[in-house]
Image 1: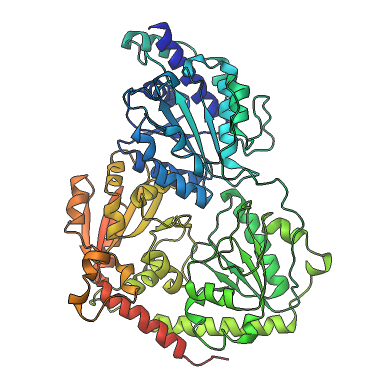
Image 2: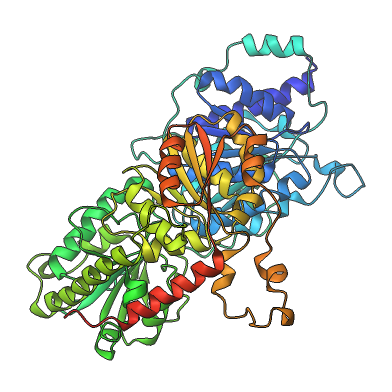
Length: 630
């Protein structure tokens, strides 16, 4: 093997091996020549425990890795070649940024001498992702082969630590790695190198960077001054940091508190903290409710629905149409907000128009989370620490009478409304499907603990409003950081790979938008059931008030709904995925039982988006007109 090619491969091996020691378990590899040394190194590192996945579409690869990262709570890596391949990573990086999900991007690049002189496939890829990354690092401008072993090891630890935070929240990290020619040695030399023993440091078991017992002299803090770190590692001149999180600090400051002896409510939004921190968070919330008696308005993505020993309000989106619960007295309550806002616009309006004292507790997320401008006092130390810092007299005792009375009012209204929804959405076995009814039926019928991904737009909103509170607990995911429909199927595949099984509830446009996600069927080791709500276009746009009565005045279908003449069952079958269709509740029950044991399967659920928009409006109107149960 040519000496230069061997140095490229050895540098790539050193970097990947050290990333494994720093906690990397999954790597998603996209094809390319410039990234060849990284690809060969990844293939060799499989024998040392690296879980390697391959994908021809960089956008799909990034979302698959994002699903893995969200489900496992640690960064998966994506490797791409140079040029526009890097640009295809941006949608997933944006979601990782705003959703606080760890992700590592390893992109091969041309050496600096080939930039700006017309060389093929040289672009400003170093800038494509920087605005949404926690940290940016580079290899030497002359090529990865010129990096010392110590510099590569340090780079690996810094990158993995930066994906997990703090002080910044978890998020994406970009390592741009110039690689010089020659890129590839001969097959004979490659086999000889593969047979050779790797350095002893690469034989040790991977460490967990989140484990406080881990100590490694090469591990440094993920500083928010990447240019300075590059100068230290590779002798480059320092330049201003480009990350948009450079003003974050280590200390959340003094915690603002609420009085548990005065009436209030808890609003629990989507869970975005580390997965390992959720059990302690749940117990802290139970303790607060036992002490305060406050009702907990729990978003479908809070991971709280179905948890025992919590008194939850699931139908707040409908209940806030009732005058008794939206009264001026209610608007002057204390509010403990946990994490980002739920999607309910009625809840958001209620929070923004009241006179409540609001305290917003986030889990290691210092970025502002109050788009309502409500004046909420935000503290990012987490609920467990917030409760521990409260005055001792507030951490023990029983709820005050006024708090108990408020809790009874909310819970009586919840019970009455849920009983009414059971009747209003009771399916006739031979009748057609509707989307609010699907949210209720599926929440009750899907197996307990089976991970669920709800696509953005209508599915997640219907689950929030119409999902059954008696449903068993299960992990519920939806990628609401940027709320796009990009990569939905690939995200679901990543979750299924990480957790062993998953169900995706998705609309037809979102599924078609990520049709390359079907390619994961060839290597997926987890089971995935895709429940496709096919309403022939963008159903959520039917909930807008812009469709005119005179269809000739505005082509609503072409401008908004955009129905596509694609048979989703045929498209799935072309990728080797079996599919069935259901148009009635009896067919749905039969086909769901068929699909769940399959390694990957599609069940197409035909609905009528215009009729479902009318049904949602009817349910909200009837819910608002119901008498106060108290």
